[in-house]
Image (cartoon, rainbow over all chains, first blue to last red; front, side):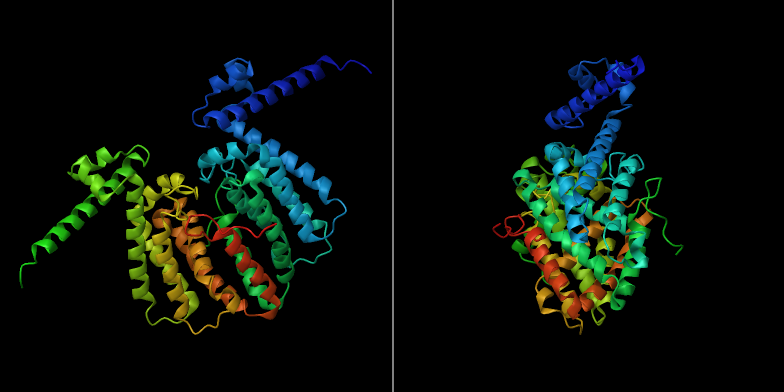
Length: 240
Length: 240
């Protein structure tokens, strides 16, 4: 075993500092509230200078993006591990949701109080914002994998938009989770278990001829009103 | 024309005062924010004593209930007027949504900033709360009328819960509306126009045999996880 080069050691130290600042920030947000926690207080608690804290995170908002990014990476890794070998769509969707709830559980108290800042799509803290695009796209890509690993034939009209729809379904669950006061967010876990087979059933049913017009309308609706483009805005409406 | 009796005059004066306090409160909430507006300031601006303001409204939260109640009454009256003679379900649902948007438009700025307080179902300000039950039940009953006035046969499994489902659909639209920054909330109006026929289509399709299991699951899901009982809580889950 050779000693890592100086650059490697510096990088490791830098990642350690970055992580320490993020951990401290999340703890203080949970304890004092997001609005009342200053970068100065975060730096002091993390044992770094204010300048150093700003070197890693330009603002408090960037700390939230760091949090999203970490959660998403954990969610993707855990889901990939657990869906391997599973080909049933309902099971795969259920696993993806379950993994999100598992990864998010330690942050429930924190998420609950900071959601006030996040529900507005024009806030950089919103999961729909331009700033949150990297985490959103990573999680949407995960749902593409969830769909790809089944033998199910998917209606061509919704093949493109389905990963986004599954991500929106996850967001609806997150909204429920934020206000879930049962221990370990048990109710949201039950809800996920119940909705996963329904989502799979809807995907299956979307091939039936009688449902095609509705599927086409739903697809257009999601595309026109819900999917956020790179600039953080829903796609423009058709000219009236 | 005879002079109204003293009791009638007193009642009219009392209603006038109540209404003046409510108007003033809504204006101040919009201008200064809900959290920063005190009952003292509302009373001063409305030209009544603080004691008098508290005589009509026990707290700021009660003012919001007064606001909900007034909006709902206006929504019900306007919708009833406009659906008369219309038997197409899509048209009837569309009218109900359009009327809500029309009645709510003057309060958009206000609703946007106070929604922060309302998104939590345990807050008395939430449309799902125990305190908001009267307005919620009145609006749900309106959707019962919307459904009753069509010749459409409704699947027995969802006949009972359908008015609540339509109310939830309206709430989803309200959530979209709160963050809609287009002039006159044009995008939300378009969204309502697009979803109304889809809702009607789903109601129609729910009679198809192939869809029955999904309809039954959706009905149970709404009942177990979304409908709020008298105490402001979702119905208890089945014992695990």
